[in-house]
Image (cartoon, rainbow, N blue to C red; front, side):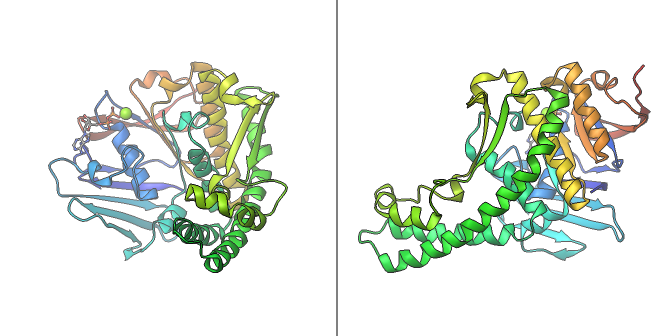
Amino acid sequence: MTLDRLAFMGLRNLASLEMAPQPGINVIVGANGSGKTSLLEGIHILGMGRSFRTQQLKHAIDHGEQAMTLHGRLVGDPPLPLGIRRRRDQPELEMRMAGERVPRVSQLVEALPLQLINPDAFRLLEGSPSSRREFLDWGVFHVEHDFLEAWRRVRRALKHRNALLRRDRMDSRSLDVWDHELAQWSERIDSLRYAYMDAFLPVFEDTLAELLPLPDLSLRYSRGWDRQRTLAQVLQQGRESDAQMGFTQQGPQRADLKLRVQRRPAVEVLSRGQQKLVVSALKLAQGRLLEMSTGRTCIYLIDDLPAELDAEHRRVFCRWLECMDCQVFITTVDPDVLSGVWQSTTPVAMFHVEHGRLAAYGLKDFTTE
Ligand SMILES: Nc1ncnc2c1ncn2[C@@H]1O[C@H](COP(=O)(O)OP(=O)(O)O)[C@@H](O)[C@H]1O
Ligand SMILES: [Mg+2]
């Protein structure tokens, strides 16, 4: 997918920004505090309905404004305009696609598949399982169309079951009903996640091999409940203990991705730098798999790559991005450190942000000397 137009108003320090990004690599250069991350944040809000910097979207609104309005246009026939508005005094997000109001953020997410690579993303391996589940489900959602419906049903059943577990007296009849619903949709979620990981694994291994050969690394999907039993059995047999805890202890809400090196958790064995490369490979592989299975490319938002990867790995990483032929927004304080990384004659569009204002300063042809 490709954005050919962005227009942001009232977003942090970006004074009514307009931008015509290029289909390939867009480098955003600027001093600290100029607004580079805010620009990526705007694209992220447009595609995900939420920020990666704050839980509360109102904090992203310019201090001096009452609302922020973000517009983007996806290339296509016809082009697809996207819009988001958030007012300071109203918690609801107003979302539009092709001029029409859309009720669900999942419609935006589907239209604009985004991959964010920033310092937080690099902590994927050491973070909580929820961040790895989010990573996994991004892929499943974009590849398997009925994932969202199954997930909604699981969430609903879990909510009801947990509420019943917290009651003073056990209502076995009602629990039976929700256990059944939960088990049924959880098995569906599990089979979709499992199939996705099956396809993902070889792409990940292939991507990682060029960044960092780690033959001992294994990646395994863990579904969140006993391997020997069905979830229906687990729920039935665990009811008393769940009631004591006040929540459902096993199920797809506990799924995780286990990365190990020689049977030990990868975070305990790999250096921080190596972990960043593993995360890079995970993120690149997801984009590759999306393209392989749906023909759609995702848009990469990469915040300050030079600060995260050394020169040699930056080069390999960027080569993958070029190979994937997708749109990339990459920020940096120093444009020179990105100048040697592009292998081919891919045109690289350069933009400069200064005190919240944007200026394009042309296409540059970076080839390795
Ligand atoms: N809600 C807001 N309203 C106005 N300015 C803000 C808001 N939030 C942050 N800023 C300012 O926006 C500037 C840009 O921040 P940022 O995008 O992180 O810069 P960069 O990534 O280029 O270092 C900072 O100077 C920050 O103080
Ligand atoms: Mg920044």
